[in-house]
Every structure is written in structure tokens, then in C-alpha cells.
Length: 119
Image (tube, rainbow, N blue to C red; front, side, top):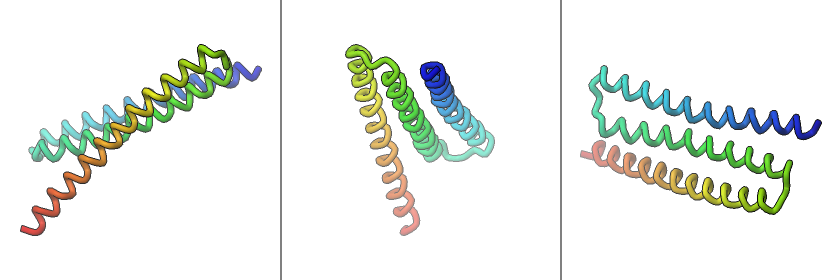
């Protein structure tokens, strides 16, 4: 009974993680398409798109880590725990670098905006 319930939770978390990524990609495509019709400056928009998509990817990685933890709790063998540790480490590193890039992009954009306003 318990494994069935948690199996369903794992499936739901997988779907949620994938949907977060799909929603981020759809939003990115909409922004890009709108920029073509409005003839916006593409360099500013690309930064905004990257930041937005990066946020969606980080969120989905967190959901997938939660799913992996629940899955390992159901079958706590040494092999499963080792696999979980490797997956969590990899996803944490990915999330760290995505967050770092997002923060770096946003700070560079803010500096650029302040330079334009002061001129």
C-alpha cells in the first residue's frame, strides 16, 4: 500500500518536473516570437529569456531531487543510496551553476541599465 502511494507521488513529481521545463520553454518561445513582431533589441531579450528559462530549469531540478529522495526511501539499498548521492550531487552542481549564471546575467543587466540612465 505504502509503495503504491509513494509510487504515485514519484510519478506525479516526474510529471511536474517535466511540465515546469515545458512551460519554461513555451514561455521562452513566446517571448522570442513576440520580440520578432515588436522588433525589440534581441540582445536584451536573449538575456531575459536565459534568466527566465534558467529559473524554470533550477526549479525542475529541485523537484527531480525530491523525487529521487522519495524513490530511494522506498528501496534503501546501498546501490540506490549511491545512485541517489551521485544524482543529487550532479543536480546540485547544475543548479548552483545555473543560479550563478542567472545572478551574473542579472547583475550585468542592472549595471548596463544604470549606465544608460546616468548618461
